[in-house]
Image 1 (cartoon, rainbow, N blue to C red):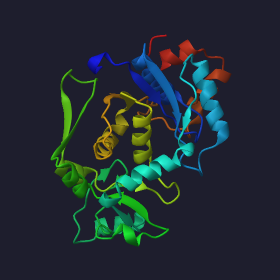
Image 2: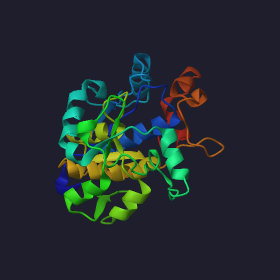
Image 3: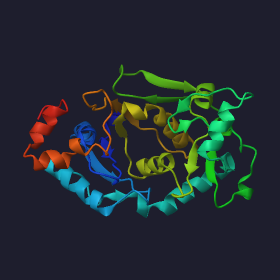
Image 4: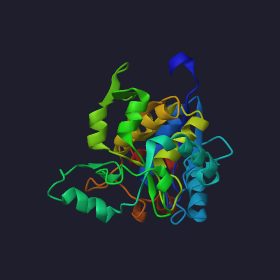
Length: 285
């Protein structure tokens, strides 16, 4: 870490189900990456419909059973809505309201006059149908999108850069403006049911908590570009990153919370030990 700074990492689960082996791996990697620094837990509960208090309780119990220790108090995103609103207001001049639903986007991309675009980290890449709308005309059913082209113009940048400790030291990842526009597009910063988005909330909270090493799965690599762009727009520092491997089932599929058979709670009830779990996910006890 530059300048000998103490490493601060975090594990940030959403309480929408029981933690599984993939979460155990992610939490252990974050904790080990911080050692002997500071390891935090953050509860990402902006999805009011799916987040449940019993799952939050289970998160603490499972992580404590694994032998992990973290700083208190734990930050909960549901308590931070005013901060996300303030950050969104800072980006107001670079945003526009969007009324398009998934079906509208799919129809626009499949129309003969439109070029079929690949999917990005948030699904189909938005074709810009509402880009000419002004924030002054926002309606209650609109989401808020970042105009990425305007964002790059505002920063005076042609490319984004971040460093990942999993690759050669001193080597940076780079993504230019056109690659971002074509591969990611105008991302949503505020959703109808949340008043924010995962991307905006995580960037604001990482800055508040002074997280300087973000460990996350390789499946979130493309999302990191969104976060780096938002960090620059909000004048936040860009942390060091570590994109780790994913834990998969016997068919090679990434584990999901709906797969209760691989929940940490299930293994606990079967009598396995924390060391057994670490061996199962390829970590030394």
